[in-house]
Length: 152
Length: 152
DNA sequence: TCTATAATTGATAATTATTATCAGTTAGTA
DNA sequence: TACTAACTGATAATAATTATCAATTATAGA
Image (cartoon, rainbow over all chains, first blue to last red; front, top):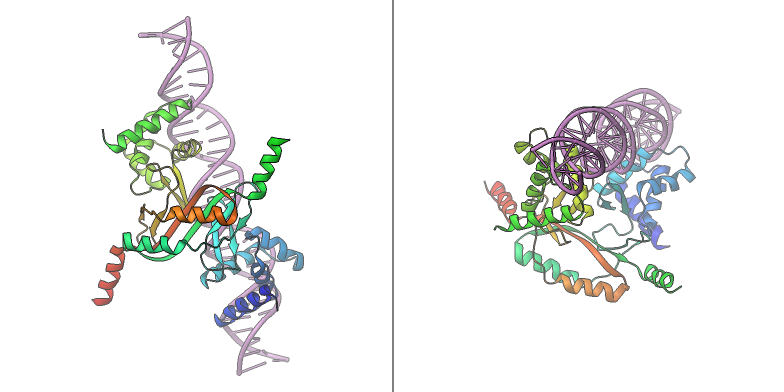
């Protein structure tokens, strides 16, 4: 069984446990999210689901995303007035590294984050429940492209 | 001269240098931002400016904020669909610690952040240009309140 | 100081992402 | 198979932000 199949099953079970019904449209939405390599927007998900179920409504996608957020099964990434992007593959908060040129979003592993949280608690007395860490920059591919442009 | 007076003068000079005119409403907006301890929303700024200039329009506040963002003199903190908050006091990116109960936003000092950026660059090859670091939790005051509620 | 003019203001309309509403449909259960 | 509450889909409503535009005003130059 592939990773995303496992993830899809997990999400379905969570929804069942919450008393939700499993509709074909819902499975399609969960399926897109369970892959979710590209951190899709609602519009992205809508387009992909419509390919399979042409009558699907945008509202249905929003409603499902909202339930999944409440269940803690997707993480929302909002960027100002732009539409939010969603991660249903790794639903717990984790840092993102965003290339401002090609808009790619990747998930780096950062061991040093632990010490930041520890320092925060020590300094402020807050009890930290969640976080949102976005680093913006230029990915290696786009850096290379810039050099080539300048060179040639 | 107080810190916020200095900051206000800096912002005024930046705007002059960019060819902007200095109107009374603009000074009022800059002044609110230059204090900016509480990371105010556009609505907050609007209310404060209206106290001094009752005919001020919300659009004027938005337009000024937009110019200041372009000049790099305010930092915008957007939270999903909620209205953005602004920091004109420390316009460069820095971490925020947000109490999800009372909505207070504070600016912690975090030395350990350096090592996170360093690790990112080492692991991914990105050139990091900016970041957005928000930690969510419950502040000491709200934690205490919870305990009191439970206790009494 | 006075004038010209282009930037700014203020009122409001437009836009855009998201949420609410609601009648008709359907998954799940007995 | 029938019941019922949850779900879907279409659309209206909401809310933050942006655009528009006539009237005002800061600033430079005479």
